[in-house]
Image 1: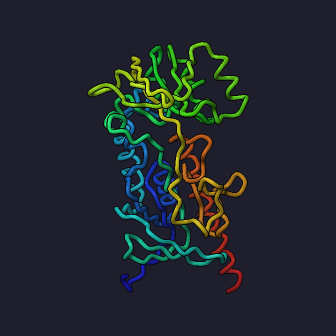
Image 2: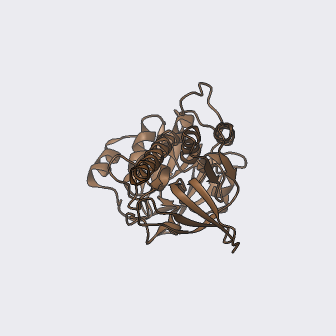
Image 3: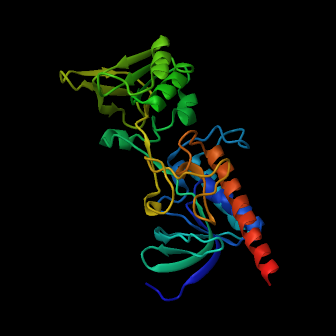
Length: 322
């Protein structure tokens, strides 16, 4: 590891809507933010073809273009955006303490404040046909992409509350929703099950899994398989939504930051403060309820404001001690 240790006022880990929004606010507050992009520069939106629900884009915008523009806006105010992966952290317990970070297993950094914007990764089935058609009709967010399938037939995979909620959402705008449940029961709460069963255009297929997603460039159908009988059946659909959960990208913080049993970072009250002074969490790394670009951006703004106020408090305390 290099012996040259860089000192940074505000380090932002992650480069999705939360990270870049935090950078915009932090840069304008003269916190001289440095962003490390992580393995997926731009975050999950770089795998989204059309973004129609982010304010300010009346004609919509594709995800990669939007993230490039967010990066450019952050850089316009002086943000230092770097390609690199934070591979280890040592977080201080002291107010005003310095946090130690390692990038790419080699570069040592010391940060006065850290904003975590590492996001979460949607779980997929990992079928070749499914992966090939991601962005061509296969999606992990019904709220994000369901609008594009208005009046059409779609399918959703999952059995928990999120799957039931997204199936209900799709049922309001789509012609028919086929819900594939791997077991002979749903894990969703009784209330959510009742909601699904009350909607006439949702057909629940138990003991059913995806065998193959059909289509060359876009989704044209689905081959289902009954995991009890082995019987296969093709249905015509234009969209397939995977709702089997997300994994927050927070492994490097385990044992240091308070998290729930899934790995989402727990923040204090309505703030982005974690249990470590000077460490703030934003976006999908701490939000398992909404997981939208606009809510991620909002918490990125909050994290930058929290960091600014934290540093101001430290500076005031130093002045009073002088």
